[in-house]
Image (cartoon, rainbow, N blue to C red; front, side, top):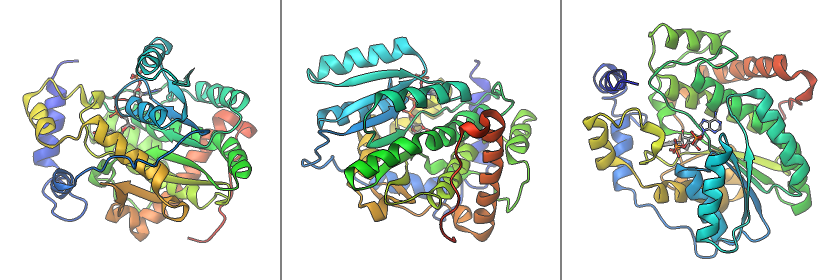
Length: 356
Ligand SMILES: NC(=O)c1ccc[n+]([C@@H]2O[C@H](COP(=O)([O-])OP(=O)(O)OC[C@H]3O[C@@H](n4cnc5c(N)ncnc54)[C@H](OP(=O)(O)O)[C@@H]3O)[C@@H](O)[C@H]2O)c1
């Protein structure tokens, strides 16, 4: 891809987007300043993951690989979900070279493909005795528009629908682990602070997935990634009110802006490289932040939480607003309808357990 659209995206974000110069909690400038001056703690010495099995999707590279490596270091068994098996095998070989006792399994999954996700969840179900924690980390960022085979923007497909489907399909085995352990298993999605930079402020949109796809396709929005992370957060919050929290709890964590391959399309451009040099955390730091949320929070603080900068953090104003909550509820129905169309009664959709 030529660098021009990527540059355009960055300039548009910096100079046309009204969020850029917002100095409230949601703005990227306050976020970056807080990120720059917030020290990232190491994982606690006493974090012992022996006897735990932890799934990390997208664990062949970037933050996912780093999380897998840290889990193994603490004695945990890791199942890595990868789009490409050769890339997964390379990651496994690296981990086994680094840790003699590494217990790593590679399983193929394309998070943009419902059938692949269903097959993946089925394999995990039959091969893993007790899935203690699932970290849904795989995610995509692109400056070029692409549609999934189902007709949705690639960010919506992978980051939102893919993760939501996998969350639902993993619930039975997480619940089983929760019952066996006598404490809830954990489901954690890797979200993003960019959910707060999204211009999306609708209180209602009856066809949100189609509408957002069209906006991106027609060039009326260039916020595929940000909007997908907002939708993902809203859907995880909807899922949270539908869980039996004695068996499974759900949270969303962001590593903050990190130097990984995620923004490779932008990095041909000097301004992006400068931003990365000035502001980005290392993968080591980003993985520490996500894992602290996944393992150190109490069950009460983890559930329905959003974690950033090493603590439970406020989500965006819009996501907390009446309109944002109303839209979240509507989005849940729409997402369930899409998943239902593709999976029919092979997917069990939990009912809301309490009033919000
Ligand atoms: N880096 C940041 O600044 C930052 C900030 C906030 C949140 N995050 C989030 O952190 C997570 C990890 O990102 P990263 O920074 O580590 O980026 P990365 O290095 O690009 O890793 C992304 C991972 O997701 C996988 N993936 C992408 N599409 C997939 C698909 N359709 N099916 C299966 N796997 C797929 C990639 O697999 P391939 O190697 O096969 O492409 C890769 O393993 C993402 O959810 C991202 O949104 C990152």
